[in-house]
Image (cartoon, rainbow, N blue to C red; front, side, top):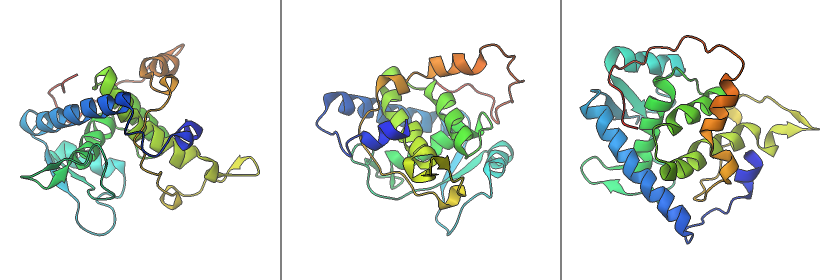
Length: 212
């Protein structure tokens, strides 16, 4: 997956399939953002201080569970297709995506921020998107995280260097779609659960079921 992400063009903006997928993603991000606030009572708050808002994923989950509150990062380079700004909040769709992904991908399922946690967050959050939107969502999550954690920069003499997560460079922001073989969350879920009993499912930090 990391190699496939590396091989993607930086901006495949003229591709109708890319435009369609990102349009669907943007619309569904907004619906999830609205649902989280109106139905679940979540208060999203942009993090504007130095450093990290949480020492680890457990602290973020605890904030959601106890306070119905979640900090999220904003800013970075403007996203070509998720850069639409909410005039009332001053937030882009990309900002909102970070928030809902941390909520539904990480906090709801107890997924950490490391390589395995990020893959599981993609797996969990994929199930909340339409097939079209999930294509773009996969580029933004699974694609980027695979490059960060398993890209060729992480290997020396054929072995993974296991450098600290904080020392690994961010992936280049790309607007393109990964090959279909890397989009199929259902097959990943079947492989993950085949031949073993699933552990008890953790209770989400909120009671209402988000829209699928």
